[in-house]
Length: 319
Ligand SMILES: Nc1nc2c(ncn2[C@@H]2O[C@H](COP(=O)(O)OP(=O)(O)OP(=O)(O)O)[C@@H](O)[C@H]2O)c(=O)[nH]1
Ligand SMILES: [Mg+2]
Image (cartoon, rainbow, N blue to C red; front, side):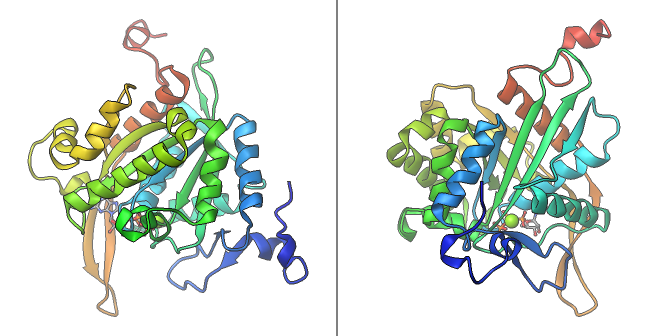
């Protein structure tokens, strides 16, 4: 599988062709895969080969500032730092995951420094490969590929914004058709544009899949995640919240006749503070492990049909 874009062969070295570099002085996460420099065919090749390797593709879908990148960062931080968990992570470091591996390190370092990832630049993605190895020998391995896209690229799916994706994102979806991807619909508590618009945007995405890629729509699994749950002040269950504030997502999920997986999520305690230039920055004062713990268990169950940490009776019997 070659990452080389034939139109640009003479102009770039292989590395330059696949990755783009930003002069982002705030972070060391300066490199991501550039969709702009890959043809749709090359994107399809990359993602088809991931599926053919039996690697479960997980794609958070959400609009700018939904919390996709912080969500993935929290999962990676938990996987690297929680020694009490009953599984271990094997991180993929080779093509096409080598830059994603650097991004993962950056995510972990940022959390250690009480900060999260900056906004994802349009036209770029992080592709992170990892294998979940359960301690229980009877449990299957789960090989995963997380795809972190930019909300700026995803928001064009809104019907009032054109109602379709760029050919590059369309390429990723096309290639996912045979890999039964898991889409995490990431929707923030109190979205900036309001609940109705937020709900409509996700419904537009689901409708797009249903109409233009019906096979993919049927094959896909969905987890609906309400992020920034630490801002929640009412004592409301996640199911009631989604039913009340995301009725279109709720109806779309019910209509699928599949098990509905809803989950709340928070990376931890986040404060808005002023830096030395009096600019507002996020300060992550405490990292939460409960939410990523629940998510990892749900993801494993959805992907393999088995429970990652043992069923209640196995725990009871100390198996
Ligand atoms: N309070 C709180 N704020 C959060 C949490 N997760 C994310 N945020 C805030 O939401 C902002 C956006 O989060 P990101 O993960 O960058 O959002 P994104 O969906 O990746 O956005 P794009 O990269 O633009 O697509 C962060 O800068 C934080 O201020 C959370 O769990 N709790
Ligand atoms: Mg992002």
